[in-house]
Length: 131
View (tube, rainbow, N blue to C red):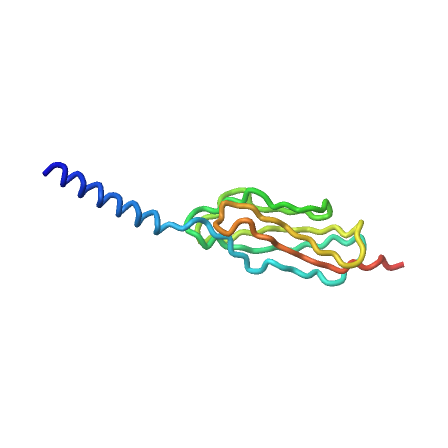
């Protein structure tokens, strides 16, 4: 009888634990947009854009890194956890002083989100400076 009661309690606790595990989903990084076009700019201009996102998961979102390849691109991202349903911003600035013609850059956002990493892109056409 004791064995039956113990097995029943174990089975019930396992089911409750499984349901609780399934109810919570990991963080999810959902951006309003992942692409931006600066259009035509002149050599030497510094342009900026803000990518807005929401944590649409159940767990707090932690952004670990926002990686870029070119030193011409600077990225600022939240270091604090982003709670469920909360919005955040990733600010990107592009310095065109050493570039010319068509440019396309990517930012690789790494986090604890289920959909990590997320790639953000921007492009611009850099024209020669006016004389």
